[in-house]
Length: 425
Image (cartoon, rainbow, N blue to C red):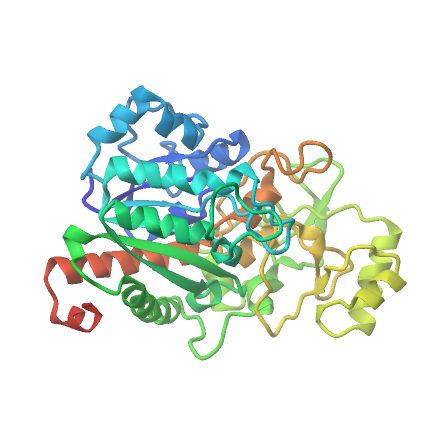
């Protein structure tokens, strides 16, 4: 196995893994329980014909099928295999489900998904990697008050830090913004970053990662020709996906899509780098909007400034949701969710497509998504169709920056670089 190898828990459709692969890491295996998300993951990253394949040493004892993390760490046979990998994996990473933590949701402390982070920590205890990364929303740091977790007196993040420290790790909390790494989206997330103490010694690991990520972020933007004095904006990200030539969608009969317009910005060229000659983007299906929705979009574009629409405007125009945005071509997008209906296109009377959402997350255009396009009804929040895969993902450019930063830190510590002295505690 590669010395820069990793395991991805809660892998979703593969945003983090795609980025780590771009940074030169090799995947050992990944765990994702939803069949649709797992198909997207394996089709792009694992299968022999996958365009971004870097999982080439998948262990024989683990089938290439959807698995839950509980199945892996709580089953004695699987746990034994994990323990055989102890010390042989450099990084264990993952972004546990965030729905129970999100301030945009109900913030229910007794949502069982809140405790899945401790399953990841159990895996870390078995695998003993040098690095551990746990990614989540800002609410991860907040203590549940109205609906507390039974028996827990602190936030889930604080309890996670406590458990990791008891396992012999130096741990720090780092807040990152995806826009700092070239993603056209203001998306802030908390990273619990841990380094095995017998590797790094006493060290302020939060400050170390923050500083290295700052360096890497600027380097990454410069390398790809992206602006370094401002963030990539919506216009630079998706204006080439608003072509005037509508054509039948090749994947979804009865729906329309459009042909590409010429790529103009460095970001568009980066996203289309591996799609030369393609005429029509995938997962770029235009919704068949009702007249009411078309009127709402047209009225918002004509009368309202770009950005979040006021509750008064929405209610006056028959929309009972208070969360709708008109995209601003001069700014990065606000935090993307799983709901495309929240984002109204900047000059067409429609909401964004899933390919536009993927662009705003920094997925390249040849990254193909599988499963149902979107989903409503009883299975919403249980199944993971394409819109949820994209909205829940760690942006690949964030994953790439994390991968490069960890490689740099690994080299600094291994070589006992004197630049580390300012981080010693």
